[in-house]
Image 1 (cartoon, rainbow, N blue to C red):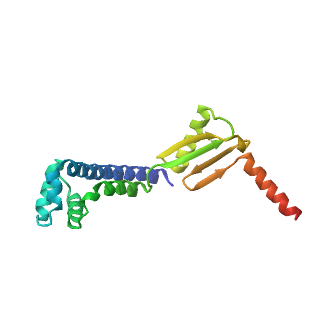
Image 2: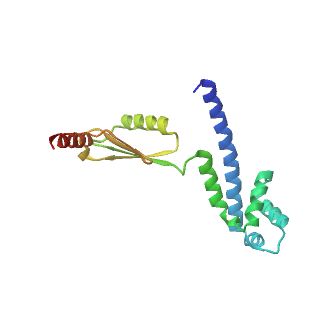
Image 3: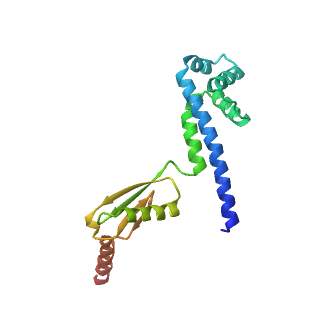
Length: 177
């Protein structure tokens, strides 16, 4: 990928993150307002109240002007009786923008305790390969004999001596048969 394309992608991601954070904050503010204000919750649940009155009450409760798109989302949620789904919608919006379902776990198992420098080097390599948002879990398993076993999401990278010996044993067993 060219340097200009990489830069353009970074700018685009920054814009999407900013927009997503604004929407997420707005949706969370609405959910908090409904949870705190029983009258607002009752009005929003009232089938006899007009949609415009509900939107105005909602907007007054969050003390923020909603964009046209945010108003449309709130109207849609109110029409469908799904206004209580605001926290779930905020969470799903963040997931859709990042393409991930929350932080991914990187599990690193080594035969011996890794130094801080080795751990930091592994962190940097995995972040470069898989992106930000990783949570790291370093563990020791002497049964590996040497090397590492790294699992990120559903991907496994096994460079342990134990797995290599096992593969060699399988190869030798199949050759003898």
